[in-house]
Image (cartoon, rainbow, N blue to C red; front, side, top):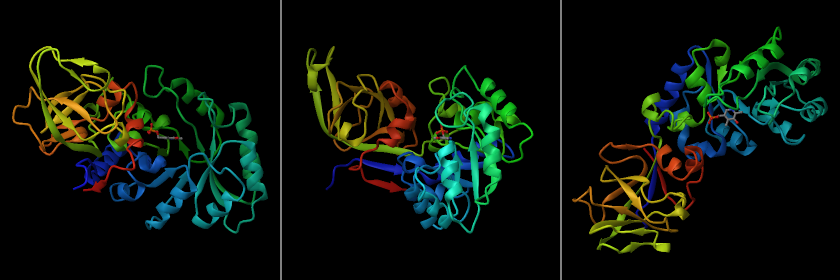
Length: 364
Ligand SMILES: *Cc1c(COP(=O)(O)O)cnc(C)c1O
């Protein structure tokens, strides 16, 4: 028998969350962002749940090819555009729309031989200072693109740096409005956080929203809000089983570094999941886990292949009991991926993307 660890991708939850994002930004079209192999879920595994999107946004040509191979004929957007001139050949062949964020990408387009003009998303740097033309340079870039026979429709895109927090989107929204005023074309501004927190604002909504993390059942502004607040469901469950039970006495310690000392008699379970499965090593004593769907806690350090969990609240648990690290337990209890993420000082994004290759994945 293989180790009892397993990840499950929940198709119905992906569908639910996508629909939730659609309702957050009424009237806008929705890019399902499937970069990083659909945030660790697997593009092929997530596709069924996400095929109701209006388009797929991603980074790698390889990922774009995989989406086309699944039979998707609708829009696909390269969020970082092309990296070298010959990438444009694949854009022509697969009908990919691509972001244009710098002069070098316009130079490549100007040299590109294509029968089909490309649809491009011209990117404005409205304050994130990662990708995009500075506001005062946007019009010149637009004029250059508009003059190219290789270019068909030109849309506008920008990305918010603080949509998940108090800083908000107001300042960047004003920069975007000013820089794109009077220029024709569709607009795309909002990621998950902006769509959920500011989707009521027509300017923030634009023509296309670009949700990623919320579609995958993680709250973009955790811990301020959790997935229950936003009406999102877990799309990935990481679960395993208890493979040993230990009865501790007062003063006994657990695991490497003896970082946990039992204050009294304590029954613990040893679960087959460790950092080599993608469970963060930075999760310490107290990190929530579910045993048989009952909320309890991690004890001691995370090892490569095992963790220990407190069984004092789950008297019926023993060898073979289900342990849910994140997601949904067999009895329907939910542990948002954001909780262990926060315990490890990181985000749900990182945990789902870091699910290890050795964990078998099933789709339900
Ligand atoms: C990753 C990404 C998104 C999705 O962001 P989430 O926070 O996951 O919703 C949207 N737009 C761009 C340009 C991105 O790179």
